[in-house]
Length: 388
Image (cartoon, rainbow, N blue to C red; front, top):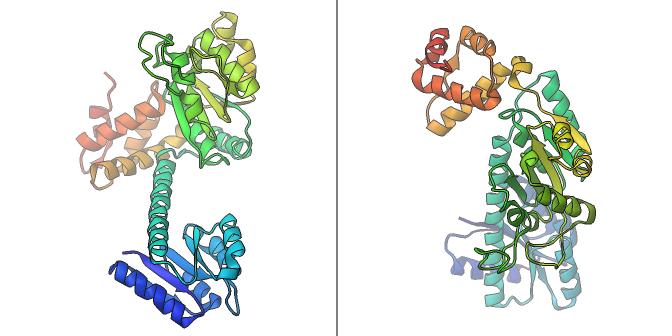
């Protein structure tokens, strides 16, 4: 049920708008405000899906109301109501964030189409907000150890810049979490975050995957196809396991970094891209450079900021926090109650040799929750946490 507020000082216009909308959709919940001040108070106290607001009103005009709404409830679409002489002003309000404007007297079709579109937009905004919250929860960085605290501080400093970041660390330590935090805390967070696992793509296909291709570029290229760099335009591309990338693809990535241009496989046409690159690897790239497997010039371009993610064995103090986090997450996924781990069970898990790092810990916690008793004990750990 959509809730709509009509802010209009002329009672006759206000009644017409309410009548049209109530007849169009019986589920609309309509409220009125005879001036801007009353309207703002209502918006502070209530949740609305749409506001219709006159431009010329006593006490507080529509421009001031729009500015206030964008500060209080920026997600709420506002449709301005303009008299004949207010059209220029109405157009300018769209630059200020208004969804649209309608003229007096309101045209029936124009009004209804505008209202429907605005409500659809509000629904999309809400869905995107919820999705971002889910994504944010998925990529939380759990830990208070000095190493993790240091990484969080680096992210806070670097996220708002476009500086390239190289994340290093063993498999399973959470390098992708660092990449997602950098993106979500950046000015590019409203843009795409495109992930590419360079180790999972065959070397002969990596260039096509990254830069796209034109029809006929190779045997199976039946049509033009955009690559990941184009998909990430305006956002961030995360090149995971970049140490496994072929030398020819490395050369093209280097060019993209230097010139902000790419070209599809089989084409000489340049395509401009605005992409921030975050890369990660579990390899020693300096050793790879010595072995002629990685370009030194690309390394220095990527490693403007270097973030080293430690193995779990070097941050054992974070294990109790991680166990609690995984327990809650797994209970949510399974639709069950959160299981408590006894102090001795937690201590025993802290003493493990976590060669698989956080990924392994998560799997062990899930196994213990499924197979253990009503609370997870030291005996459960001995029985079910074995790696053999």
